[in-house]
Image (cartoon, rainbow, N blue to C red; front, side, top):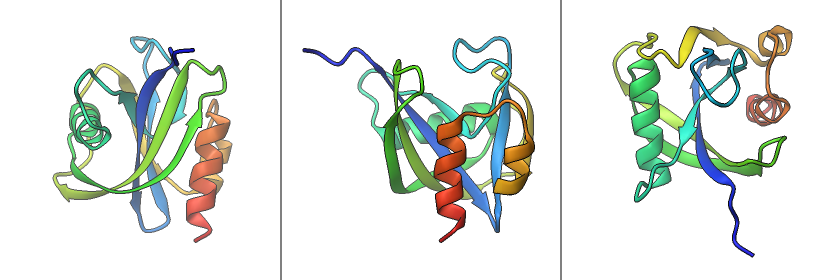
Amino acid sequence: MQDTRIHAVVAIIQRSDAFLLVKRSNYTEAGSGYWCPVSGRIEENETQEGALKREVREEVGLEVVAVEKVGEIPSADNLFVLHYWKVEIIASEARICSHEATEMRWVTVAEMKRLQPTFEEDVRILEGLSAL
């Protein structure tokens, strides 16, 4: 049986003990209003690393390089396969660059837990990374 789930990348952008999150706008198909790391679908003939670079540049204007894949899990609704990657900023300052996000913040995991709404899987992954 063919897997019909949509594959998406999730960019874990960390500075000290804080992670960059965006609040998804109502223009987004998935996760409207949710606080989450920069993420997006992998386009046809695109690598995960390529999708990460494109999504981060489009949404928050940063140039990044993929460093390490840290997880692959289904979304809570099982419509997506989420590929979590740590990325390193190589140029620019973060800013909202797309209608897909309305706000952005650098937050610790404790601060993320107070933001509403968030995806449980994002909290779990970032919590695991901040414990390292």
